[in-house]
Image 1: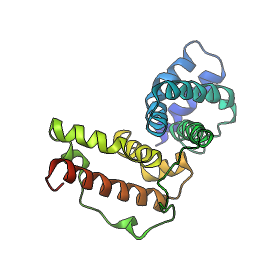
Image 2: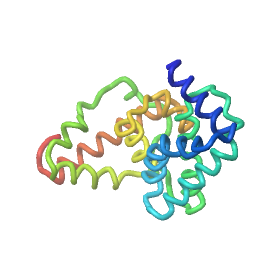
Image 3: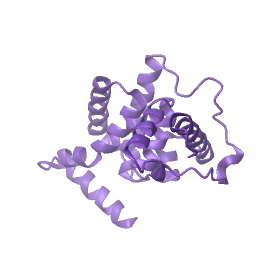
Image 4: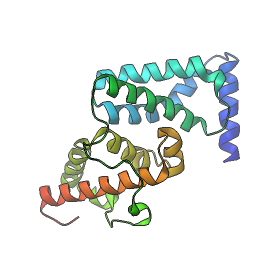
Length: 191
């Protein structure tokens, strides 16, 4: 963790000192994270590209305010999440399904037995899984992406989204259940 913090500090210091290529290096390092968060929430590629640019513009404008209280990845992820969230609110697109529970749930420490990696074992199942993920509400798509594709920890996702860890676990649990049900329906095989 200390190595990450030192690397964060060195990169931020380089950008703030206007060293050649420093900001470009920051963008290269975090553009994948930014794209995953925004594209999963927004889904429209043109809007996602524009919102990613807005994110890095905001990062550039506000980097002097970064206080090293969390990893730079979390700080940038939080900016991307907030920008995507505002876009969805402006477009009046629901973040979660109506009636969805945003509160903490008893499923916090319960596994559901659904293995996403095993579900991707063959090409057809992977295609069905991708379709099922795309059918999820924006928040659940984003949380799945952060947790499984970006391999972001629950505490770090909490820092990015501002959500309680229990709420994140609950959304992940419900998302995996929906994915399992969708795969069972589409493939006829119990996932």
